[in-house]
Length: 403
Image 1: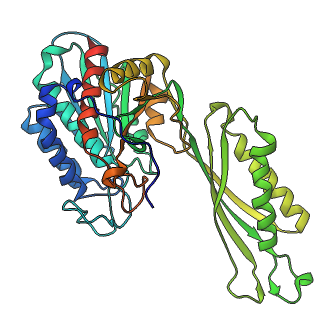
Image 2: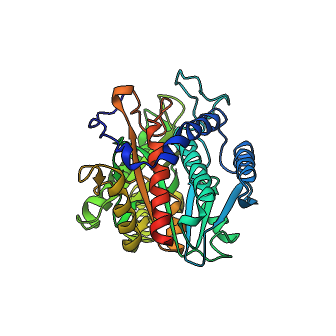
């Protein structure tokens, strides 16, 4: 079902410079080429080859093979100045596409269902424009084409391999095409934009037996049900209501027959929060809840808990820079959306933990064209007008930051 969204705002085409408007059809072509050839995290060989070929054609210095398939392009302006990095993620998802379009995925069971193909195309458009207009900025721009954002954390090995060094990056920006916002809007805010993501798996060990004789057993399904309910009290009764957090049990598996009490039950879930001070709290509290319920029922357990991503927190000054630039590209004030937080997670957070920066959303939904399906849906697609907007905003950020 298509999401219900406000009508798209009028895109201020007069604010998209002529060179970028002229380049836009080519950016669309790149995006559609990439959409037809999706690849999963750390396997983006065709994608990396395509990006590297374009950079080579344009005479842009670049390094390949970083964190397996990552690429960093370096564009030097007309003099000494600060170093601004721009990040674009490249991986697709293990989803079978259901769109009936000419550029439908040609790789069975894989799809660009989150807009990363658009992110690559925007970054390529930005790289091309800047390489042709080096006289408009000083300093250096590093464009980071990152593998494996979708759950594998490709940002960390790229940072470890030095993408923010030589020259050292002073600030970093990145965008996400966002079907939760209509075309013609930009979501940008100071502070926490996206949530930390932590995950857990738990096996409950009971004692199986006949469904008619529960007194001879320790039923792990009953224990699991109590645990699921009790976990919800962590947010409702232990977390300050001013703070936002979510504990979700997404999987629960147990039993093989209607009249058999199983020996074990398995569950897994996720934890989300914005406040960095909560790191470590949920792991401890979840184990306390599980241990307490198991002890009261005579069961035992094994818990695995790990952090996937920290919260994505924007630097105040860089967020204000992006907001001021975006305000020149979209109609204001309606076009700038400050209340755009999401409990979704992003490994852009690792970059923002290392250097000041800002991650922001570019509205890409257009319900009138049936382009408003949510991210990770098999019919996800977006209004490609947003591609030119993304390039314009990136270029203006470079001009303003690098001077």
